[in-house]
Image 1 (cartoon, rainbow, N blue to C red):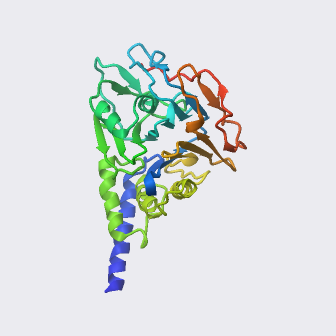
Image 2: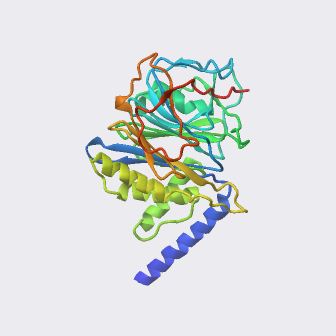
Image 3: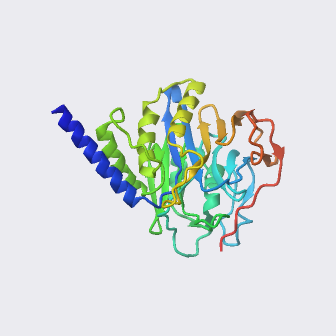
Length: 351
């Protein structure tokens, strides 16, 4: 009886794996997961998996920054209420970051994204969406209430490497609340709640959930899918982020999240001729939202760098500051005081 049951499980898993292999060949990688430790120790980790070096650096943006004036006359304009530390992509967009209130925003690739058609609402370029959220909101609930009103229209441009700027977004806060934002068939779809801990890429989120439920029935200690495809990474991250030791200790919690993000990473140099969109993990971030520490790991570097937001002056007029990571792979340790004054990068204008 037990042997037959295991055989059925294995056959079902092999069938599902083949189905995903056929149906998800266009998936680009990236994974995000939220960890619920004890005593409010909330930590969000993500991988950035991409086709090439994104020339990413870390930036400090203060409160009181005027935004939107440089990204087209029809663009949304705002003034930042909160300071943030962010990781840039191509020095033309905010790929990831955390603000001084512990709100984290992540931008991940999603092939199926389709943004709203032209209308008279102000526009917000996808590369500025994460910055808009970090600048304006302290909690997920606050952000969801405003964003669901859709007072602006999200637009996209191709990345500097020519790849389509098709993305979706996740946010989480210090309480562990979480939300996923996707634009499907031109409509905004929001998944809001602590249960939405994990996000990867294709298929769309509503289709990821039943795939993950399948693996829950099998149980992560029996078998987990092991490929670098989005649905497989979703299943592994969902299991491991909760199976890991749930600790109140900063070091243990951050180490646990890094271990999960490394488990779902794609090794450097991985490429498949028939599946050119599978990408290596080029960097990882882990945000300790209770203690306001932001960690960055370049996979080509032997060391972590981190920034302590509680020690940063975010007051208006304190100035934009930059930590140059690109071309500096041997940098390591606490870099809070090593940022240099710099001109903020410009978001690309929408057309």
